[in-house]
Amino acid sequence: MARKQRTAFVPKSRVTKPTYRLKIVLCVALLSAGLGIWKLASRPLHATKLPEGATAKEPFAISSGFAPTVENKNSPTGAAPTGMAWIPGGEFSMGAQDPPAGDQVGMQATLDSRPIHRVYVDGFWMDQTDVTNAQFAKFVKVTGYVTIAERKPKAEDFPGAPPENLVAGSVVFSPPDHAVPLNDHFQWWAYIHGANWRHPLGPTSNIEGMTDYPVVQVAYQDAVAYATWAGKRLPTEAEWEFAARGGLTGKPFVWGDDFRPLGKWMANTFQGHFPDKDSGEDHYVGISAVAQFPANGYGLHDMAGDVWQWTSDWYRPDYYKQLLEAGDLVRNPSGPDAPYDPDEPNERKKVQRGGSFLCTDQYCSRYMVGTRGKGEISTGTNHLGFRCVKNLSATTP
Image 1: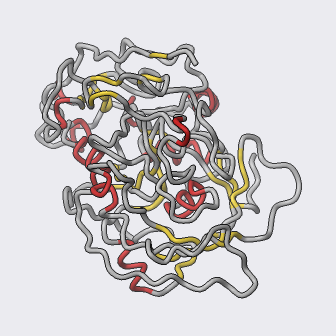
Image 2: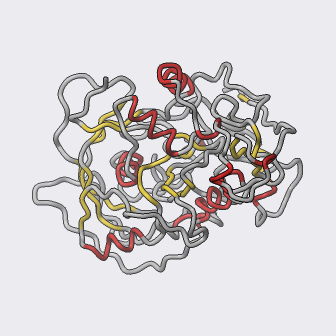
Image 3: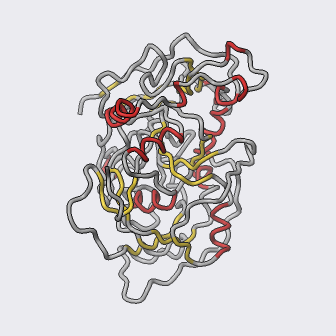
């Protein structure tokens, strides 16, 4: 396969003293999602028994804390909604597997993904790919919607901010041209004036020729607006993980046990030296079009790479512990009632799932299924998108 590259660049119109949504420090929330800074103590786990007459797809996984996935047997009649796959739902063990051998930072990405706990979700439809630029452009054309990144911040929302800092824009991965310490994320993230979904890297970039690429630079509100217009919704965190696992039990990756089975690249991730050199060994430097890698067991593409994805759950690092303490089986969990991130307690964050083109075992192992991300709801980046789901009974207008 020929190597495909979209050159990363950083416009000079950079805001140097951003505030709140404008502040670069928001990258702490975005990047620490991969590291899982909040430390939860693991506790002994007990696998639940299978329902009588049910058949698991894989052997019992007692040692890892995972019980078999048990899919619902019901399936919808009639044609599938365009571009969507049926996710049967059922019982599964939710949470992160131990990192694979050789992954030096993977355990950090599982600390808020423990303890493993048993969950049931109803069946639903899910987009086979992330929402693309073409799909989002159609929504904007019909509705006239303006994304948060395109709106000038209001002075009353940012008291004390200099007027010159109140400019529309968003957060962009801006790699240095040399190696830097990995304890300083300011070295590779910047708030760029004029960055938005039409201009993902800044005002001199555009999405021409990228109609089938994931839409990025979308805040949570933007994703909800699109989903509502499309007659859909965003997935819960539990729905997202059930779908990502594709019927498998407790695997570290959505395709199985090995990061590169038989040497094959399975997702768009980061190779080379992070953050300064993406070598593109997987044939892509930066973002790629959707569905360039194999689908999982449910026919879903890019559940472990390319871009992170919004879910509808508020983020709390101790939420799994709360669920386990509430009982053996949790049905259709929708997240905590309110968000809380001890790293930034005043920020309102939603859970983000999946890996991205920036995930690497040098820094962020979010390509591991079960790991959790988090993001402030008014902030987008150029490696964050979304996909939608729909209930079986729902209809698309």
